[in-house]
Image (cartoon, rainbow, N blue to C red; front, side, top):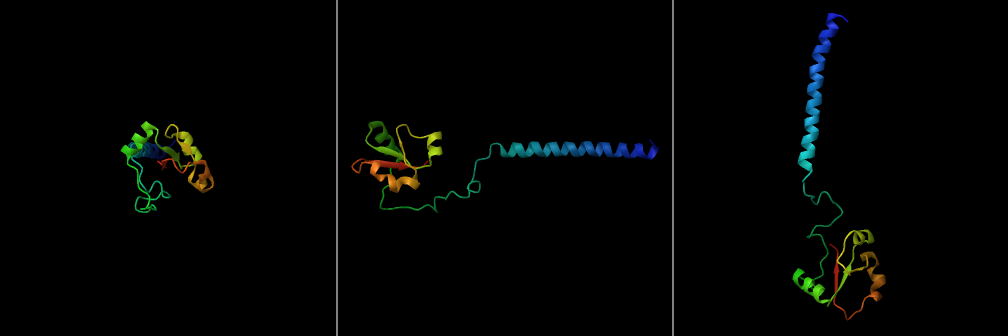
Length: 121
């Protein structure tokens, strides 16, 4: 190996090591700053925000306190209107699973005289 080639290797090797080190630091920094990040609406572009949701003022909202009391006293029927996969992952014990897309066709499964509390979260 000529003197010129060894000089080039001595110059390139430290620069290569510095480049690898900087790359590793960047990978760790990206991981560090994204691991505890809370999801935002931009993470879920197809989910409507509260201002975009359809509201039905003629249908009263049930407070969490009233819903919990109805649950404890068994005075309401809870209907999970999420898809079957979401229901399978977690749901209110005893809740019926009737996905929103099937609700119109499955209304006959519900008793009109019951207090029906649908939920989707």
